[in-house]
Length: 222
Length: 222
Picture 1: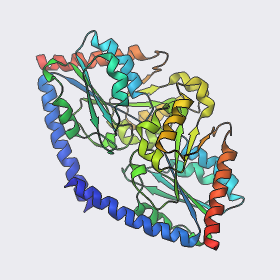
Picture 2 (picture 1 turned 60 degrees about the vertical axis):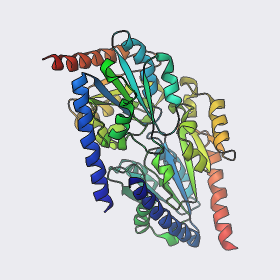
Picture 3 (picture 1 turned 180 degrees about the horizontal axis):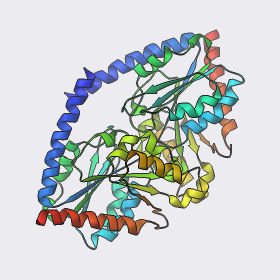
Picture 4 (picture 1 turned 120 degrees about the vertical axis):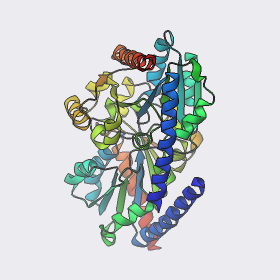
């Protein structure tokens, strides 16, 4: 019976995700679903990304957190609209959370929305929230086995970011094993090596985002 | 309706957890539920702990993983019984997983069972699996804000291990903030600073475990 309930939950979630995706297409907004373990650097990445992007684009953030506003507060200085969703104990965001967040965002004046999902490699990969693409973020101290241990995320992702590359010499992380596992799970998945601390890789990420924003807006103009 | 279903799931889980706890009491087995983010070092900790403990005690491991046997394989060299539970996409272990694992372990010949839960700070803290105590493991690269962002685990835990202390000088981690947050959430929670790489803190952990094993066995002899 529980499996049936879970199937119903996922089916309802997928239906609403489809509606969200249609709305984003109509409004020409790119939505990126950022997924990682706790402490891999999702918020740090946004701290670096928002100031760069907002000079050219209209940006907002949907901040998913179990129960605090700590990450939202870290992003306040960026002066972009932030919709905070507390999941009250749930380990992932669902489409219904995104619908709620949309009610406080001005969708007629946005080019891109970042969703910072709850820090977790499992369930956030299972729940479609209507995003254009998922970005998987992992960091070197977590070890090179994360893709093979949490394969769904890497199959679903459109980009993998390997953060904390500045710590590579201090941790047990085999870059070749990591790349080979990613390649096996998802042959088209690019990896950007990054350090939010030193700035390495940020420009590649900005370029990737700009291409995706342009592509979304171009499709709509046709 | 979903809330009611979740309440039922938790109630059924808690009932079975109670039965597991009774059985462990009767068999004089200490069961430790290890909870952390992906990549904080649960398996590394067990790799260091099993060789030490098994010289004196009868040890087994219940290994929870989403879908692979990677961690179980890393522990094979330890030559202790390992029961692997694949959760097939679920982000945490439940009591029913422990009951299944018990069916392949010889409970009449064990002093201590380690449960390596699925790498996740949220749901594993919410599901009682009949353990004697939860041990929360965090690592310095994850940042000092983890206790305040995932408070339930730190309220529930009987010990916090701060791993990868050897990386402290390379990461943004304020030890005073971390300790103060832990203290506020759970004034009785001890913190062991550890590096599974260098061995720092391992002896404190072994001492803690030996005290708990002795205490469990003593209670039963009275």
